[in-house]
Length: 79
Image 1 (tube, rainbow, N blue to C red):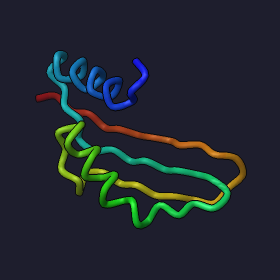
Image 2 (spheres, rainbow, N blue to C red):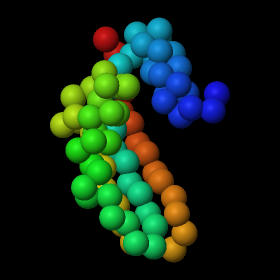
Image 3 (cartoon, one colour):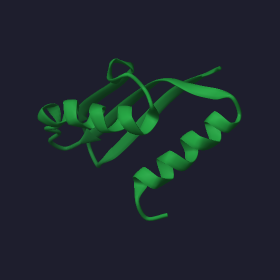
């Protein structure tokens, strides 16, 4: 899979097949000069559609640091 959205859809489908659902998602980006604030509403909208999740249950933050990396946490619950 080369499109990350397709990969995410596949994972979400597997979660749903096991009678689980995503409860909330937290995303933390770190890079030398993060400037994602203007993009956050769009990112939340896109992710909420892919995850079938309210945008209010998606948190996105950015921090200044060495290198570039992303950390994601997700809580799931049984249907």
